[in-house]
Image (cartoon, rainbow, N blue to C red; front, side, top):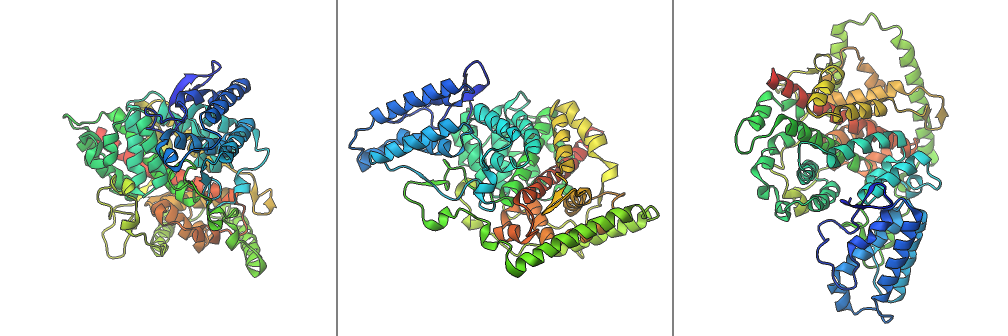
Length: 559
């Protein structure tokens, strides 16, 4: 993502074009990044004139005989320009600009310039690229892509995958834009640093890299990017609450809040802390989405391109095809859909007859589900030393991770009864009072994803999926220790098969351990867009759970 430059055509401000933190020293034969601004205009004529002028200038700066190897290596400006052209040729929402960038890369290749090639296959390594980048995308989806492009300088891979659900993406985009770019208690560069700290807890190099660039664009000190030890003490003081929110939010107490707010040189104001907590929970949850959907590196970031032809394996055009449903597996998957449909129908009928279930019975069912969730664990382990330094340097106490809310033989903290501190009655009003506007946007986002439905399920239409959506949402809250008095947790076992439970718990609690195998093994006959829908529910349920714990601690501090 980029920072804003001048407005084009009197419309939305448009961004500088080259990767963050590299605006100052443009090497010979690389174009001044300010010259690309017109490409981000809403006006077709401005884009066309800018592209034509830049193409002529770039080609005129390179001899017809090409450049020597030494000249290529020295020309960092050309390197960045080539990466920008590659990105625009793949993800620019304006077709004519996309096409001209492709042609310009081909022309440069014709002059012997080694041009970058995309690694991977589109925005996700789990979803087939043709399902994400569909021809004639919905007008609502296209409008959001254009808004992202003209206001931040790119349509990133997260946005493209979320674009399968335009109503949700619209709500998500407005919330994230407010958190990062609009007026607020925290300076913009510190917001991006907090995003880096949050993403690093889950070893999410995609988000760390993205926001390192944003941090520099917003005027941040490059020294801070050497690691958490180089950041100001005030930001370092967030480390404890960051790791607890990321992995065991039920441990947050009013004492954690008090320690940050106490008067002194490095104290936080309550308004600043609220914004920081929302940013932390937003990026912890977004890391879950990145891993849950197999989001690929941005094409112009490390791991997204190579300056030599990629190997055939890295260009696999259909990432999810290797474990597709065919033969007996396909018949089994079809049967799973029918069984799930039947169970949903029975549960909806039984709800009308369960008015007589006692509170004690409801509580017993929750405790049973919570205990059973202990057995749902991924078998994958990630070696700490395999992580890149630019992620590890932002993590203190890397061994601190999710620990099951209730372990046999251990003293467990009390269950969080949702009715005692609800988002609707408590959390929403507290955030709105201390950080106006964001509470309303968060509330809208929670409601949009919870109620989002197309009345379809796999090959069936006209389906009421409310019981299934509620089971997924409440299971996420269950593994974080939150219980709804009025919910029958027996439904979770009825509706969520074991492979789906493993996937949900992994993505919500330790997303860095998610594998493609986990993704392909649940709901084998469902559409990829339906699996993305599950990930959106996970993202928001997880964020709301962590926020409820944090806001309850603030409320206790204030009273």
